[in-house]
Image (cartoon, rainbow, N blue to C red; front, top):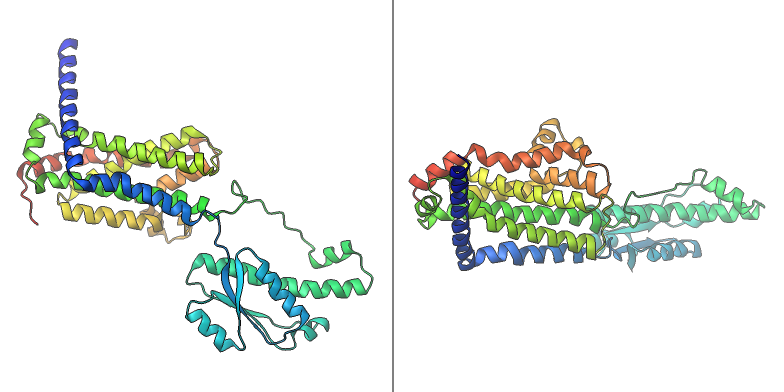
Length: 398
């Protein structure tokens, strides 16, 4: 019995090997695989990490409308220009000019200082300083809001500091009065508040998943398109599990290599924080690759059409960026959307990364997300018969 089972296993492995060799030829002959598995992922990794290599957008253009034009207001403008993220590029005579500059995308916002501001500050009559900013770009808008609000606060504080010194208050008394509560800010694992660390670790894996989704469905659909599906199934001895294993074996190795290269570049070369260590990253990479391929096979099994399966895979991958929870938290979404978010592999990838890699918590805290990725990898089991039937009976329709 053991000898018979060993022979059968060796025969299955031999069939998987021969199909894998066949796939080497198909990958070599079709440049789509080379570009989507190697060239485009490299471009994506370098593009996103270099685009935000400074961590935060810097020197965002802002304007000022200074109708008071006193040493106090000019000092406020110099402070605004001195911030890392803001750069004063223009001074306007009225609100309409500044508003038109925003509409022409010349500036992201402007500070409006009405006439008499300094006199009202000195007489403690609470002048109104306005700032206008565009939220078309969320990142630029939020950063400029912070700078403009800080400048408005510092302007009144500077005048108050001078007044209190004239009355004989000590520096300690002045600080206690102007800032009764001191804020001690500690961004966890990202003290630089680098957007590159927050964004690239979600966008790049999401794009890599997009390639894995679509190439998996593409490689299955082209069997029917090029009328090679029956030959493929015959090479597997009619065993669809052997056929799928042989077809995806080489792709899995290449995808794993590219994902590990991404991990090495981001966490090794760029030194992104990863207090969770290496093992969670390796496990997460393996789960993400097999889950993405499993999802691609599952979608093709549901609708054995090259066009429809690739369309659904691309749509699901694009929606993943919104449903992952990096930009807008999932717990703040409506209940149906919160439930729907669990159907996206990128959501579980992102949660597992946040829990086990970025924050360094035990892997067991992410057991649900690990189980979800494993379930995505097992989804093809429910559609294998449908795929085999499609390969043997379907005719490609352009």
